[in-house]
Length: 382
Image (cartoon, rainbow, N blue to C red):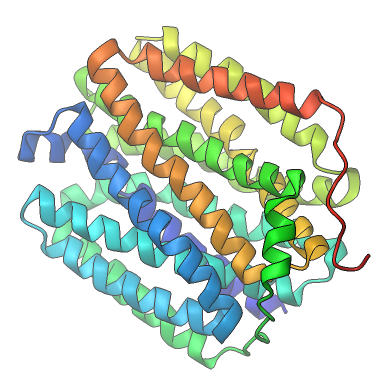
């Protein structure tokens, strides 16, 4: 059990590192390929587009062939796409490599999370998810620093090394104990898609992805315009997420013991405040501080959202692998729309508009959590 937790955590660490590694490199790629904010947003959004396409197939593969096989093939594809990114010489090639990285990422995540939750007792599932997601956050924290170092060491050498690491983890996964396959029942999928709390869990993965997607396009460009170097921008994002690594396992334990509603509401209130503050901030130091606040506020939505998705999948008879695949698609929608729409609105209306839009979405979500819970669909145990 402990070895599996370490393996799964290491896998999602590398995966998340690759997702955020391009954040401090946005200004460089924008200058190299002549990209506007909209173009930079589309480049970052390519990862989300690939993830959106790969979410359901990844979940089906995890359920049908077993989480282990989904993880292995996802890592192999991740390694190949990382090599392609290392060799990319145009914005189109770079975007295609990021698209494939996103596709492989959702396959790997669906398998890894299903692998972990299928072996954990139900009462400890939130803690398990929080631990794995804490590792993912650590990867997301290290990613910008990796991107900053990659500029100094060489992008080709750096991403080639990451590809080799992905291939190594694929080999280690082959040697690990497999989890059983899960039955795929159309009735379970129908029940889940009619279940308000399952859908709520999906939205709690879409919303922070959208918020972060906006942040990772606009904040690095704003800091670069203020004269910050790539390494300094990477350091700002590194410092921002350091505390989040510790918070997510704690959130998982709170979720197991106290329920999900309170941490979700607190995170939403904090997210409204942070998004509104970003909308009115122009000083680079203030933006850097708010990046840290955003990492805590936005990121605190993920663990209870994932736990809610997993628990409602159990209750409705939906296979965990498919549930996490659907969840990955929900996350990917935010990761695609956030940078693309955020960059476009930033170009057309200024940075304040996309940040304020994010605050409004958080406020509407908070209002929805205050409504009395409606009658849920009958569970498969009923």
